[in-house]
Image 1 (spheres, rainbow, N blue to C red):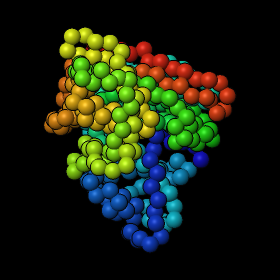
Image 2 (cartoon, rainbow, N blue to C red):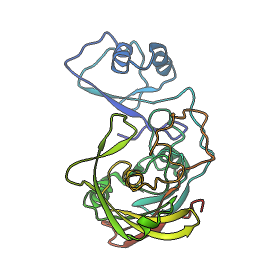
Image 3 (tube, rainbow, N blue to C red):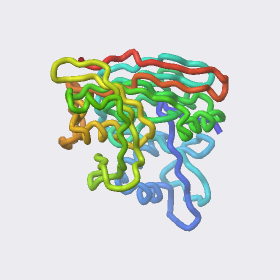
Length: 300
């Protein structure tokens, strides 16, 4: 089965039709399966040949529901935030692609973002529809993201991240603290869990599950540039840890105070001063030592 891709480089999603359900037709199934999408939108997608069988053939809204089969469908958004910054491809071979992501650009489609994502931009730019990110960084964070090119090799690369065999180095701009600097370098540890608000993580009592090595790079009056080397990969780990040390990262819109979520009219003048600067690992396919460094810099 070939990967179905539209003219904008967006790959189709798959959906399974279970045997324990029954619908008069495919339209009824999609409306029930995705209640947040109006029936009229599904009718338009059928009309525009955006619903396909597993062989890539367009289906009609009135086609019968056939259990134990897979179908494919394309997402589309009536409106999407524009990200006015470009990514760069730093390295590409038959196995991996290394991209330098700008601030504000999500890695993969979700929510309000479909075309304006690093994954879909790279698919459109390279024509490689099998690209798959091996790890993620926040939409607010800039820097290095590595993609697998060949699906048969993806698991071997992902195992490196699972086994913590990848060294990642970040840089951040945060307030200068003489009390903290006197303790650097230091390894900060804590237990991070989801908070009541899905956007924020919080520190709680208990066995630490997150650790970050913190080093000082440079001081500029009331601000400092820090090197951060995470030993674990918890959501918002670096942002949480610096916030817990009373030096929240400059222009962080989530810590310590969660600001209202910007949907379409983004203020791109104040990017989070956090950068995925370096990444190093032993390539499991070529057995080469890989080392990449972001060409981006922070506002210091």
